Every structure is written in C-alpha cells, then in structure tokens.
Image (cartoon, rainbow, N blue to C red; front, top):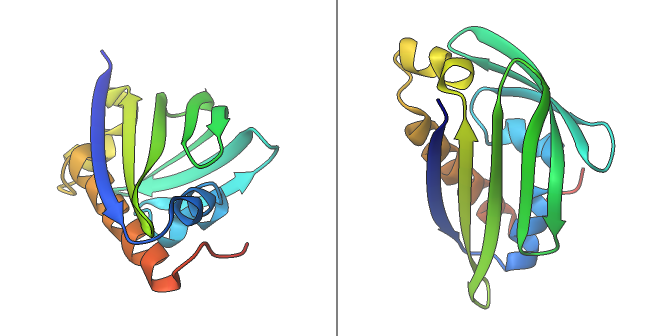
Length: 146
C-alpha cells in the first residue's frame, strides 16, 4: 500500500535560487536529516545513502522530469526504498518562493525506521527537512556552489 506526504514552505529567496539549490543534490546532507550522502552519477541518476533510526539504506533515484525554476520529479529505480515524488517552485513575489514537496512511498520500506524509533512520522521528517532547507538557503541568500 502506498502512502503520500505533502508539505509546503515559503522561502525568502528568488525562485531561481531556490530551484538551483534544490537541484544541487550532493548538498542535501547539510539540511536533510538522515541523509548521509548523495552522489550525482549522471544528469538524471543519483545514488543515496540514508541512516534513519540506525537503519542504513541505499538506493538509486532517477530524475524523471526537470523544468527550470518550476519542478523536479523522481522515482527510485534500484535499492532498499520505494518512492517517487515531485518538488515544485512557485514565485510569490520578487525574492519570495513557495516550495511544495510531495512524496509517494512504500511505508514498509521508507518509514519503518522513522516510526519505530520514536523519531516521529514521515510528515514530521519532511516538514523538518523543509524548515532546515529554508534556514540553509536564506542564510546564504543564494544557492551554494558545489
């Protein structure tokens, strides 16, 4: 059975900066709790290593859609997690962007470690990651360089 989570946040940076930072996948460990490492292997393939509640998982994700300053979609293609998702970027005003993240996932694969170790729900995890992304990007004022 597939579950879904959707969270949104407003960030005080232009849409271009938010989009560019989000697509620098190797920086995710700086603001995503439980993400140990991401390697960008090709333009459309990333390899993830996560550790949540002491459980390490590795998987590959394929970027299935990428529209500059608007959206990035992905699906896992190999490994220990089954998920897909999309993140969208909506300009609200000059220097202000709404980011919406929606994920579909297999609860048995992705959330076991989170829900069984007292770390809270996936909704809580995603909300926290978006809050940390907001602090990360706003402190810089623009995307970081990798």
